[in-house]
Image (tube, rainbow, N blue to C red; front, side, top):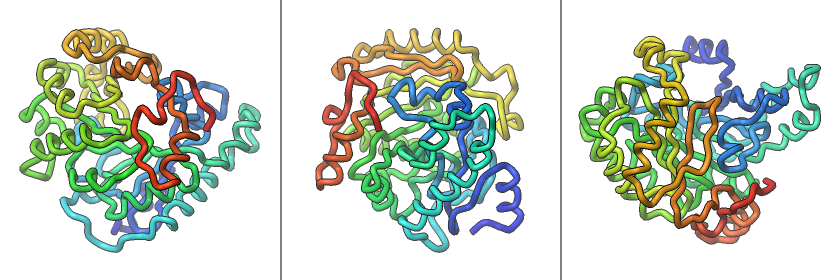
Amino acid sequence: MLSEKQVQDLEKQQYRMVGNHSAVKVCGWTKNMLRNEGGCYKFKFYGIRSHQCCQMTTSMFCANRCTFCWRGAKAPVSKTWYGPVDDSEEIIEESIRQHIKLLLGFGGNDKTNLKMYNQSKDVKHVALSLTGEPISYPDINKILKEFHKRKISTFLVTNAQYPDQIEKIDNITQFYISVDAPNKVLLKEIDRPLFSDYYERLIKGLEIMKRKKFRSCIRLTMIKGLNDTDITGYKKLIEVGQPDFIEVKGYMHVGASRENLERSNMPMHEEIDDFTNKLIKELPDYDIVSEHKPSRVLCLIRKDLKGKQYIDFHKFFDIVNNGGIAGTEDYSSTKMCPN
């Protein structure tokens, strides 16, 4: 699937390959939490404990080459899956093993919170958003079920180029679609998609999002001077998907994105705040519920959720592990809940 050179380059960047097409890497916020330096915005917004989060992907392939992606072209682009399909349980077990192994050095670090370090060995959450397009993994619904059986909550981010894969998903703790531009012309410029019907695929994915019962979120990554325009266009796309949450996040000028964009394209938090306040005026069904300044991101919530931004993990697992379909209202809470 990947060449020996690609694997070597990934390992130098602290990635670890899992089987033929999956990979894991420790998130910087996981490291920060272990050093008592604070958790990521998902902790503040939803109650995800950063030190117990495993960042991974089930597929290194992607059908886009987004200009703002800090991860860069680490693996082949592809419209369709090719090669072997690894067993979902084996992917989970090896991903967690590699994740724990990558954290071993924290055990002997004077700055480490040892209680949190010991807890980190008990993975409670998986962020399927490392690189590539994790939803393209053929057994995506099966692996989500396997995570849930282990009482590991799931967040998955997709650019919606595989709407049929979205349709497969029965339960997920929180589902994301990245809406990277407000219209078809800008989306092609920013995402550089392989599919000619990239925009139609996005629309179909948003329509499926609207129908699904699980918690959903649209993420806007704002690039100063490029996609921070056409608020009406964003409004129309958001209204198609009708997500429970909207994250408005600033582009960060790091990694491979520096080859495509300038530092001047990175907005300050105040500029994200200003854009969000303009957007909220066009979205009467949403309120701003929280912000995380270090990540330059604001979170919007549907008003009819009445401030239930947090996740009741016990309710979620009780429903999905007993054959049910968990709806947003079923496992959302106004209070941060233990995982």
